[in-house]
Image (cartoon, rainbow, N blue to C red; front, top):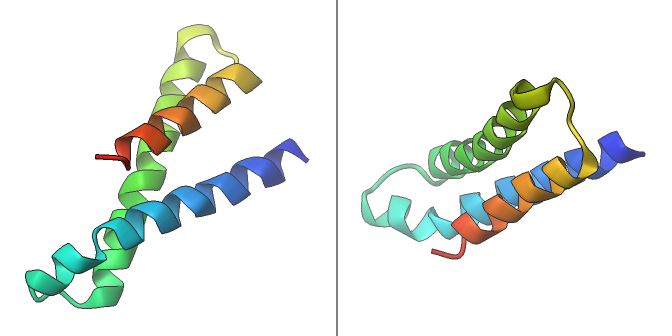
Length: 79
């Protein structure tokens, strides 16, 4: 169940980041689907990076560390 929660939240991060830069891609005349994919993958990559760093620190990935990674992602999309 925890894995499905992470996957669902990763999808939400993907969507939030993708649609946040859609207008910027249109202004720069970049195809909309390329803009969505790149921005979404960057957002997911940031979450994965935070979780990997937490895992490297002690060899464990706790629920709190996962929550912190997603919280960081939600704050970075507010800018």
